[in-house]
Image 1 (cartoon, one colour):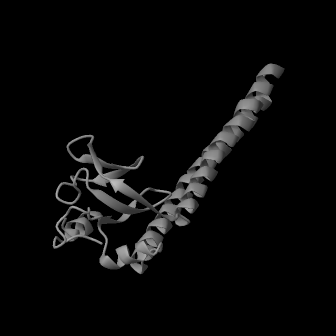
Image 2 (cartoon, one colour; image 1 turned 90 degrees about the vertical axis):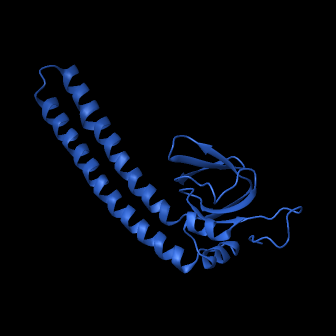
Image 3 (spheres, one colour; image 1 turned 180 degrees about the vertical axis):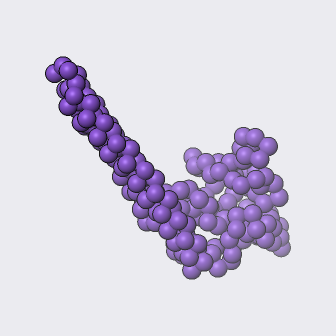
Length: 181
């Protein structure tokens, strides 16, 4: 197994792998993930603002139409649906987006070990299945990951993003071959 192909395909360095083996993120991984988390939080704030505006607009419409409705039933229904339910639903979505973005920043490093099973969804859409987990892959993993070989994957819990991979040499394999130990 060529360790350079694994590093190139999964975009990690030897320093990343060593840090992940210790249960930590490397300095490079921390920097990359921090930048991504900041961008995600900025995007989440923008999306949440839009949802809060939609909630406020629904509230305004509900109160306006409810106050001029000719029947008491119409008033109650407009106040209930547009004045209460609409704002709660849209504002709740906005809050959830912000909380999910914050949760990404606090993601933990996890490990899974087992034989690799490659799944081909389309010509360019592949997934790697291992011990009940399914990881989406970017492009064709042929040459980097071999079906049935045993690997250890280090990934982020929240996003299931693979951070580094090591091939685990089997006992009946040639000891002079290039593998991760």
